[in-house]
Image (tube, rainbow, N blue to C red):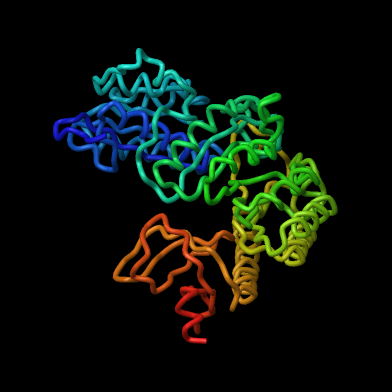
Length: 436
């Protein structure tokens, strides 16, 4: 809907994971439907919403800094929500007398709407929907949309505070997710990214007993591409992978967190698998989805990690042949078992182990790109600048292609080719055929 020139202004600042981003996008949609101007600039007196993360002490520090920046950027209210707000409300309130902390995500829409002075013609029903799920009609075009389907986690990894911040696993009703994806299809969205804190734990009884059933249901909407944000190794079951393999809309990309390639470290972390189980899950995924790109997360310097453990982790990562690594240095988070564990690794040692992992990650990424040379892909166009289309392939490669007729939201068939620097670019298939 069109926004009036004098409409109240709300700016969003989002920290942390894709679940936070999905929740912020949902809030933005709901506020826009009520006539609020939502964007990056709050103006001199607009409201700023800071959606916080608390996964590490560093994340807490970034959240506090972002709240202080927001207080300096506006004379209006700063609303703080998210995981840190759920755990440290009083600390956040103490940052300024214009700070309003919303611990309960389900009340966020109503709170922000009240602050900016807008009502809800539906009698409050729209504002009462669960934060991060369907939020009424979605008439805003986007090439890719995050769709939150699950929240909370029943695992208790030694380094993670998220179960305390978000609670136990729970799922959004399949019917609500279906309505949202259907609306996105109508608006022209080509790709949805299913997000959750522990996505593989999704369940909605008979309607969609597991994540595989939900994917089958959503594929019937006609959405061009379904991507998963992250999936835990134990959830790569035969049934799940069989459904992915036969569902054409599923993107050939899986993000499967590893965290360590050392069995000793995985045990201390409280992870629910060892390296053999992880390797078996990876082999099943690659058999069910030929050519799938697998990316992962690895933590360097977890408490008690020895030089031998770090070497084992590096060697295992190399054998797995990932398409990309996300490397993190271990950072204490108060309230987690790992924070008070003996054997904390010195900062310079953590930095060196992270450097070695990142160096390996660069080599793996280069090798994966080389393996895609000359192969085909469908490129989701996200922007076109000066006749060059910029987008993302199904296996999550950032690629450009010279194609002036492309528009944002198009799925363009391309042939991938290596540039002199080892990076990939795309060639429009018809152009390639003509050249051949």
